[in-house]
Image (cartoon, rainbow, N blue to C red; front, side):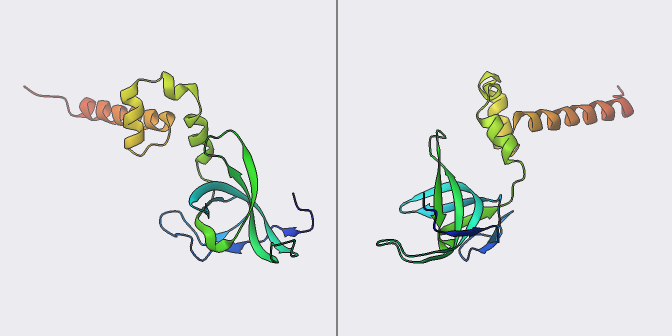
Length: 153
């Protein structure tokens, strides 16, 4: 780990970041970022900005890079990267990623009926709890409708 860099917590403009959906073009501390590293795309979280780092060996002077903690493909370790803003593909604020990762790594997903897991995923509900809450509201609304509009024969 290099200790000669000047690090701060200012935002960084990412010119190639997609602004579709919740995406934004300025990364700030705490944001989730997708970045290109060689031929791979990696997931990380911005923890700061490298304001300046002097040249070191063959490494040129570095200015205004994102200081990112990356996540390995197998979710078994993290690593530090200094990411050039032009290599950032997506920047998003934390919304419900905690709940999604908790669900993704939980036993609840494997113990739930397969069809329920598939429905919750393909319906756009990111966790079983959200899907079950939605289904409970639907069932309550249907029961309320049937109570107010009894079938006549």
